Length: 562
Image 1: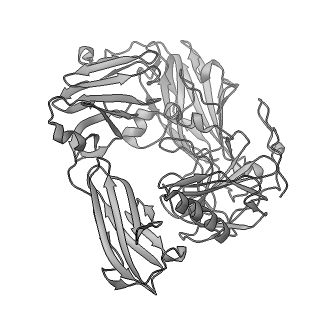
Image 2 (image 1 turned 60 degrees about the vertical axis):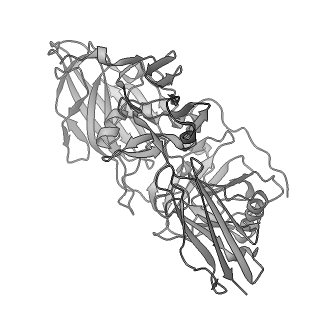
Image 3 (image 1 turned 90 degrees about the vertical axis):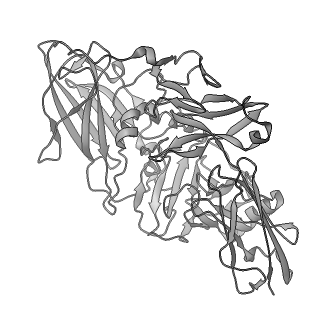
């Protein structure tokens, strides 16, 4: 097969929609495309990098190559995209197909050979351009629900030659959408202590008044100083009820453009900074995402364009101003929000006393170490976006580290000195985060060096030491010991661990490793007899499952096949 040349087709400036090939990529499914998720949509920890295409609540739909090319990457993992396929095309773009049930027979045989060679379900391989060529509209896989999927669907991406995801709809992938975006909430924010909105120096919800033409008016506000605005908005396509993401947001102050947010393309490195883009504290308490239409410090997102004064506006006393927000979907349908502002200098009411001496200051631009009793917490430079006063308390082996209301850029590190623990207990200890109403412990990846236990986390909250001495459970689901399984396609086993969680597993038949696919959502291991690696009539099955602190269980059984 001819080698592909990767064209450098992007410069540094913005692009017109016409610069993307419109007839090159075909629909990856042979059904009407209906979306459960749009490109750039706001997720808990990232911007959505593709289109989530509904598969009629079914698995096993044929997935087609969107254009000719070659398979440049196959990644099989328990989490994330699950079973994912990457195809590089002659024009330099790569298409991605995620949450697959299985690959086509040819590709499935290739990846299973790799899995058996590495004796691992989780593998990642990068075939060269000659190994796995594919034609346009070739069946490459079947849709599924693997990895972190919340239901059957196909995740579809188009990436440029720098691995940056781009909205597939820019390439002519068409979704029926005749409805304009809608707005559910608008908020005003003071930039600093000198700014007031309706007499308050805090986030203020604004009263939305829907208009008959589809736009929104906001009840007039009073303000002074530098302020910004936030919005909660969604778009709906015609064939699905989902509240999906919008494509573009622009703001205008007294007729002049103030800011633009364009969900056309981004890099994976910046996607984590969605925590800086949304009002993180509000999201954690109310489960609603406010998009802040202003740029705070340490916000590296390239989604922003044409930002004047970082999207903030300045309000003088005795002035009348208008702030407008235009929200667009990909089809160009738009919705406007009109916010009248009266400039008025007011006196801020006295705030309740904040017991600052009971809180600890953590700096954003330099390292900070907090220590109490046997627990030390290290914050390295740029862990936080802003300096913050946080609650830091230690009660016995429990660490109260604020609440999950402050966004973090990277991990802080918790260290426990275990000198007061007996040596025979050390291997079973781990650091856990307590979550939920019942404060259930959740394992945090933990390392031990001597008598110091360490773990990193990006989430404030309550942490404690936990001990796990109970091994995982292993139960057969569709067979019994000494049973004939000649007519069975699959061998199914349920594995569970109540405290620290499953770390690894290994299955053998007659001493030889067999592939068992692990689905963490259902706690099942499944072997497909069509792998044709089990040839004997009498077969001795052995499964070893290990949890995150090293407790292991072994399951053994005999089954027969002919």
